[in-house]
Length: 348
Ligand code: NAP
Image 1: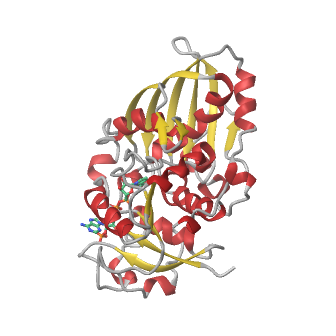
Image 2: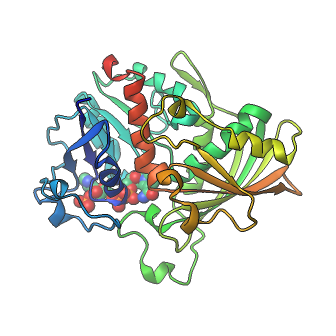
């Protein structure tokens, strides 16, 4: 198969760098152009970037000259890791030029015809892009990095037992704050009990993700969610403690069973970035942990543990997912793989 050229918007950032790592040697895609701010544009990528990943920067990428936003790009697919201060208008600009944008920013997540997509959870929402009016282009969004892990853990529960209420407390990694992110003097020996805008995202995004799709419309789920978000001194991997109230009586073993057996369309289609097993359940009392479990299935799986009875809700448990892989670049690449396999590209 001839590889499809793609470009990365916000290529120098935390998410942009992860895109570069994951797209090197990808079986479907090859990186054509890199875009970043005026600070970086015109420079060779290797000179402009502060490469923070523990793998070498590929030489063919280091020598690419960074483009400005709104410069002409020839690849149809653009992956976006742009800062949200600029992402809204830039993504719309390129969609209007006929590009398909897969975005990690919050700006378009609640637009009426924009899917908030997790391929294992709500692939049918992709149909929404047929109703977009960008003259040949489209915008698809990846949910917030904490929402993705949470929604994957809830999907089998919702499908099998029904779910009414969720309380979630997050402990979110530093790479989630972008580069250079939180100052070391703020986070070392510390936990910060606030991440701007994050609780609102966790409380609202699952309602769209679990909404029912019919003929260009999503009827939002009535799931009730309360979220509290904390920044902790971990490099990668968001840990979340979750309490759930179910609609039906079930026992502990039933929930573990549906997690272990959970599989979706990406697994059926054998997409290159799809984890073979999307959810891993651990029986050890002290699992999951960011340092130990974030890279399972190349960072694309969600790890769960500590399922037990809750005195207030029905059950409580802990989940862990990699924020820049499953929660951003890896999740977006999986969306693009699905787009190709489902032949949506031909619709544009
Ligand atoms: P980041 O490290 O701060 O990177 C931001 C990128 O945007 C950089 O490439 C930067 O380029 C570019 N940029 C900033 N201002 C710009 C401007 N005015 N014009 C053009 N480009 C501009 O942020 P990040 O963590 O990668 O996050 C990127 C987006 O993904 C954000 O919307 C974030 O909320 C979302 N997200 C992040 C994560 C995560 O785990 N980090 C997970 C899910 C979603 P320069 O280097 O040239 O300034």
